[in-house]
Length: 127
Image (cartoon, rainbow, N blue to C red; front, side, top):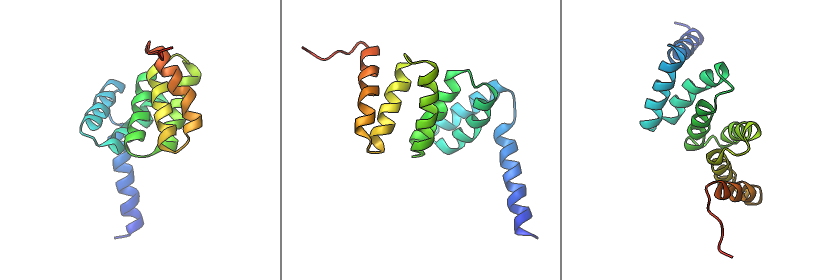
């Protein structure tokens, strides 16, 4: 059998599996994958969900977390920047963005996001 056909058929099957169901079912499936620490599978489910409901922060934030935990740091950064652009006071996204930048060795860029996240959480430095 043609290996190109097999690969294409498997990709189509996988894409269909990850995109199957209602948004609520896919959200639940993504959460199950995430909880099982299968971050790559969670991301595959969440990509389609985020495209479908781009205005919702929850799926995009979970997608960023899945990318972060699967060491897809540039992708995590992109999703987190989108959240922060839309909602500058989203504290957890700020924290995750700061940590993602730190993990890439970009400490100077991370610092302002971490300071804002601390301030949003009510953690102020002692004077």
